Length: 260
Length: 316
Ligand code: SF4
Ligand code: SF4
Image 1 (cartoon, each protein chain N blue to C red):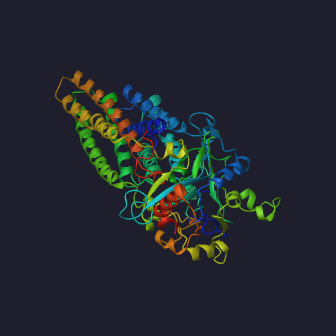
Image 2: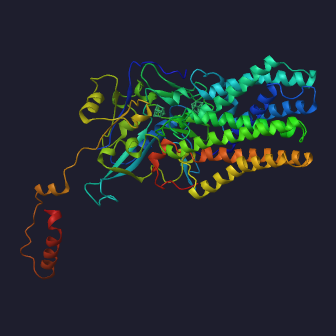
Image 3: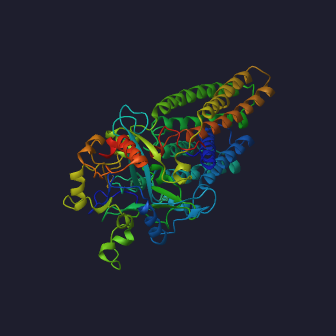
């Protein structure tokens, strides 16, 4: 079971747009909601209303700041920026989490490349989580079995759902359209085209896992100064007198650069 | 990495047990003598206790038998298979000594080789992980094998071997001194590798793919409190503790046993025997510290998503 298939018919996966993600965590919540009632055991929480709440999630959003060269803190030099960074299982082609599994509970499907855990076989040794560089696997502490993204295998083939809903829950939920789902093994699929056009990349290629999921880089930004080409609508305040006139002068002077 | 007591006990105790079994399996100790019989029982008990404690950290230990199935790809599975298989020759040899006062050298060689392969498999569980560059080296199995050999040898002659003061005891002590030096020399090579390993070729820039924009820092973790990943993989110990514990480990595991063994050669046999026992206990205690540090100081790639080298993850 834990021998990886040499090829898979499809490479189903996600493409995540780091330019578009606003870091709202909606996908995290919809993932938890769908998967706590779906595949395998529930995603348990420990001490949910106490002082130290924690629980198992299959999708997490980190937020990074990029400090440009020459800067010490964000904003101190050049164009700094904040990037919201969703992270879930990348359904790697060379998935080490599968080969280290002693029981055969972890496997990669030859048909579509999805990496799954058969929870009835999992002994909860945790070695697969140790082998995953991306932190995509979390042990469920209530059940003692390993949980991971299933690519919503119980949605994407589910004919009881409307066609539009047959995508992973996170993709369906994302209000910003930052998550795309499709067959990355088919060069003509929408996701493959997207990856080509936007320069999609692998996370930690040096780990040799050949992740299927791809990330799209933040788009290049126009420099702050160039925003000056958009003229702000000016109200006619020439009839202001007294205090109002003073406030008008003070504000126009102080914010002339930013507002115009 | 989180230093789980069950895993530390497993690697130290089963390592010492396999080392002791190896010495016995190579034909040392008269099978008719009571100390040899006790030594066999001790070796088997150490191995069994170690293996049992390793199942303590499983989420579903009742299914542990399934771990024998994936030996084709998984070092953990190979370790499980080898551990069970090795019990066969070792138990037969122990029974031959205890019940029949006899020994079989061919079976001994087979058992001895299997002991070493099992320890090698244990080490490879860790050495095979690309995510932990500190462990991902040939030095890791070398260290595990040598510590098993040294602790097994010391256990044998200090508790079950010839009387202190006898010629054969002296030979064992000299042999152990050589083992100690070689073991710690290899451990030193491992430490050199480990201190330079860091996150290997990975960085926060490669983990996020954002390196072309500038230097990447964590602004917000995905969750306010700890989770499985931060508890298990982003474990950190303060540098202060690390340095102090390394010192304690080297004192208990190397200096003290060495000095005590040398002194034991020069004093009266009764005192010498006592010092040899103390030296062995000290070595085992040092091994526990060494193994604790092996886990606690290891950095896992997932730490890069939690701030990397920066102290954004709460210490301990
Ligand atoms: S991201 Fe991690 S859990 Fe998912 S397939 Fe890759 S190694 Fe396995
Ligand atoms: S935790 Fe479960 S799925 Fe992961 S390696 Fe262990 S047995 Fe396999």
